[in-house]
Image (cartoon, rainbow, N blue to C red; front, side, top):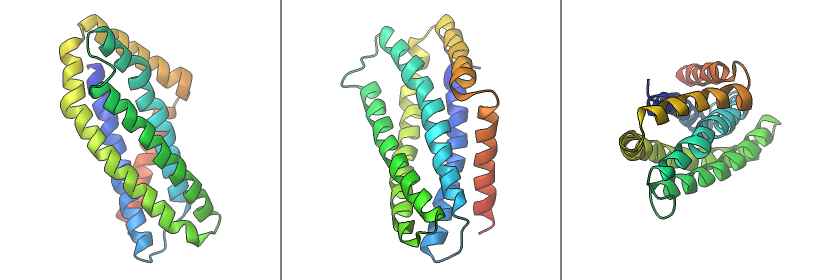
Length: 185
């Protein structure tokens, strides 16, 4: 497996969670009862799995290596991806705050939950498409087999040292939990 294949697999898990949260937020907007803790769990998923783990692998390992191999960090695709990571963090921060207020019983926070979920989903779906179809293709062309192996080892280190043992599986399970909850609506 290539390092970019692993990142693409993570994209599929992130897309599953995005789809679920989109449906959950839509149900709230339609006046349906949705367990507010699901939004707090989703904010945790996006902040930890999508950003800290997945984006962390890209920012700390893939992007610097791509730059070393001649892909400019300024003014090109790497700069765009980094900027979108920053935008995503702002959405997740606002989403988490609104979700926590909503879960604490503040029903007036529901519009902020929905607004930030919508912005994050729009941003991330386009971001994922650009990475899958452009950036990772560039990486595959620029990186050697040795680079790829080093990335995979680095990714493993991120998962165990930064995220902790079993975290990857826990977040895969959480994406499935969110998906199942959304399917029941």
